[in-house]
Length: 328
Image (cartoon, rainbow, N blue to C red; front, side):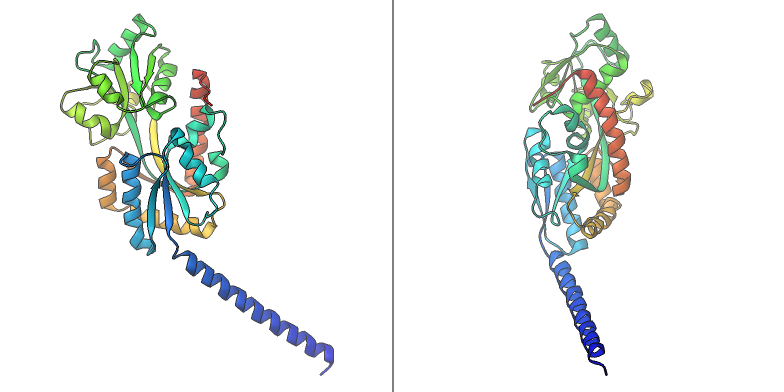
């Protein structure tokens, strides 16, 4: 055998060994990664509906992935503290975020100095469900229907007030969407907490509230529902609650919940978690609990979520621009 042929065969054997070693090392690394603790960041405080749903998801996914999952609350700055945590994470394979539409499609148009951009820095894992808000008033208010409410606002421009959970919050934006649609002038009164108690006590004429928050007050007659913001009828409400999209064609103000990863997360990790989340969202028990919180279970794949985000972002860019709001 010629010397150079022997050297070639030896070289090929070494390459084969190195290739096998590399494959084994990758398999071990992937195996080790699947045993690491996963973090689900919630950009709002403990006890909020989003926090409750996140912990429910974590409990359902643990046995599917056979992996430890912890939920970490990172509240503040309209969800941007938690968002920044995920965007700059140094552990993209194990760090995720469960959040609402506000942090993904409203904040980028509302805040001038965001340190990250959701559509650039996050990748969708899957949609969990959709929800909405309901416009409510005290029984003593001079209006009992949406038509009466809008008529009062036209007679007294800028005098009829509505409360929300803060500037730029989902409830605030639903009010601004109503203003854009009907061309009435309303007075927005932001509250950091407890907007619903202020409408019950008559401090404000009306307020926009998440479905689960308002439902007990509507059922007991402490508040009158002028209209719910979605096309679907939430089972937490009496059947008499009107749907705004039926009386205002083209109006629909939804809130959705989705799970996100850092854009730096490995594709295999995102697929694995997305597959597990699909099973959770399709589970009858989880769906029942989601419905009890006023949400409609709805699964969407990562690619479908990208389309949803792109469309919603255009809608909220228009609404925010119409308000003239720009926050630091």
